[in-house]
Length: 615
Image (cartoon, rainbow, N blue to C red; front, side, top):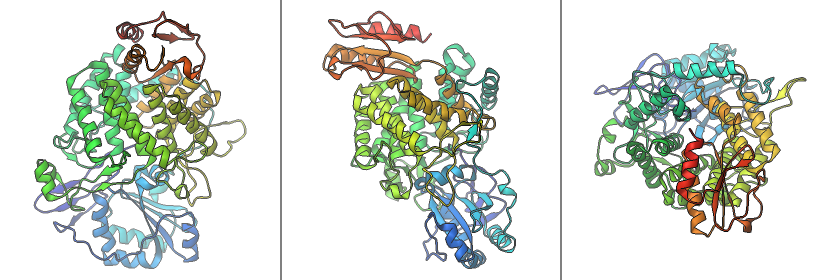
């Protein structure tokens, strides 16, 4: 979901060279703007209103157009634009007279963020009073360009060329349930390989960032694909340049087609992707460098993005002074940085970001045996259940469902609960995950498809008469297909299997699957087409021998796995699709297609059977 921007700060001149880009925090187009070295706060010359469901009705009543300014707390260019473009007299004059101005923190509104994710942060969208898009602009817009554009739509409110591509995609598709056709899969694999930068490593040649899905696919294929293994290894090694050597954590991206020109914001999505990826690599290859990278991210999450209540915070800005580039600051040691001040931390505790963090910490704990990481994950999970849970199994974004109910929150927490179940064997977490699946199926359904078409995909937000009706978003539907498929394997619930099929049906549709990056689609395809590695431990949960076996099962170096712990005191397994014997001592069974191995009574024996199964 995150695609890095291009921006250049000219040293000494303190000028901004701005160019077109499709990154999340980006310079816009075509000019050079001189700025003061420090941006002093001043009175806001424009009146901004929050996003609401009646924004277009109000605009029509007032005979105005609507300008939506989508920002991010961590975005460097957002305050720059606020201090230059939105204080320019010509811009102020036309916007004040003819526009209803809406400013939104994109992290607080996932529906809008998903809808306009290709248009940078800041993203600028102009609408008429009927909600029809007139323009979509990415990144920084210089004052002259903004004044010209704003006046042009006052004079002639017809859509400009930036909206010809539309947004979203059809919510119905004819793709049948099941894996991708072989020809389509081969084409997506070719796209994935072609997108790899063999000179610098990583996917993409202009912006360098750790593509967690690209590396995960490479790790998935590594055993029988030397090229994929090499791509994963080279990318993991190169991406360590983005790890903050002082505080830990991962910078969002690097510019210039190299890994050595970082921009310094630290966003939860980037942290958790990196933590998961390096943990997965360490589980597979046991390389000390991968462990050190994962530990650096884990340390940053613990020290900077964990609240005193155990819930995870959202992001940390790159800039100590808003709008002032931070390369000099991040070159300092800890004492030097703290003497100058601390970049702002967004202290919102969103369910989605907490779900991401929990899942990543579970992966780290599984790979390393770090029990404190698992304890932190469980603590955060308990906090979210206490403060973000909704009736029916869903989760609110920020504690107030009136602000909107978003797929991302329930999906991330469902995945987190399933991860906690597989890491602990605690049935209550599986109940949470199952409840999330049922809530998604009931809440985020698209409209009925045309006759003869299959219903496909799920909306990014609950439809409730919004100013902009919600649309499906690809990353969420990929993640939902993976989550619901694995949930169905654990529960045997046909409703979860149907949930996975509907999500993947949309993802696999022509025009959706082919969008770069293709790795997420290929991972989901591989999982839906195969049984997960299935290990069941049988024995009392307070028996040290059973505990050792379960720890060994959790450590199995594979992402796609079904882990269960059968303690007779808990009753039958949620999905009783295999029959297991009652033994006098604890044992673990490796099961495939309804048949299970002979019992493994030691972690070493189980490890040998897992290794053989993964060859």
